[in-house]
Amino acid sequence: MYALLCIAALVALTGALPETPTPAAPVNAQIILGRVRAGFHAQPRPPYVVYTLIRRDKLNGAPDFYNSYNLRIWCRTSDRGALSRRIVDNRAGDMEFIRPEFDKPIDPGPPTADVFEALASRRIDATPAPDASAAPVIASVAVLIEFDYFANYAGIDGHDYHLKLTPKRDPERNRLTDVYVDRESYVLTRAVAHDHLFVEGAAIPERFEVDFGTLEGVPVITEIHGRTDYGAMTYDRGSTPFHEIDYRFTNVAFPATLPDWYFDPKSYGAHRAEAPRT
Image 1: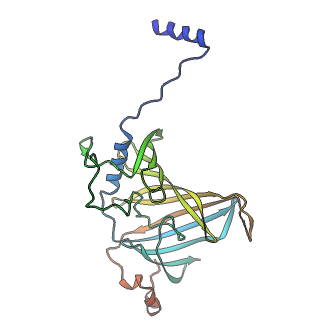
Image 2: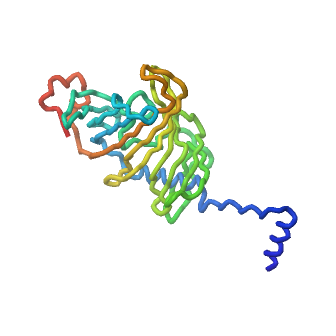
Image 3: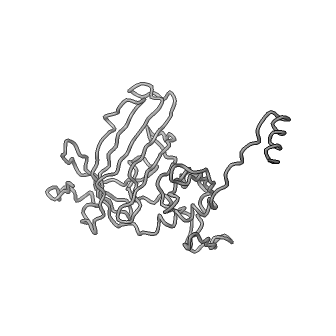
């Protein structure tokens, strides 16, 4: 009763109700990030991954058929070397050697790509920061805190924790801006990253929304939606203020081995009869 009288008095004096405080994070955001990263790396990446990449482009909302296609890809994950074949009307085209990678003038991938990849400049024998060996314990699971990002709790999104990330070092290397983490399993379900659309030698900022699933215990990318707003840049197709792109990774498999010649483009001509199709 006393509390109600106090609120009424405050409203009478100010004409406004007191602000509702923002709910506190259920646990420390940095610890959540550390745990999801540890889980993401708990399963070793398969040495080979085979998948179909379905790409669909749009310019100003209209389909761009020229840049829309399906690729069947056989990838060696250690160096991302890959044999690819474009699929048209259920027929496989010529063999082409590629290296799928994010934020490069090539299609992103593979689906097993490590979105928490550590900085290239980090040495494993470097002297750690004073708290770098701290291992917070959540539900009897010890995890190391992720040090490439500052993490801030941004609330609940459906069944997920939403974390906002700020890179501690090179933002072009540590490109995640948001992650969504299952509140029960601490599995990464979705992420937002900045990438680039490479057009006529220009690298135009692009926003990627990335969805994740799990295959044989390995986290895999299932879909990517990208959007680029690049004003009045003019091409032979006319003015294109925005560009959208969707990738789907389907028919993913982890073969135990693949022939060495798959990753030697100079030998493709001698192996035309053996070229894989599925």
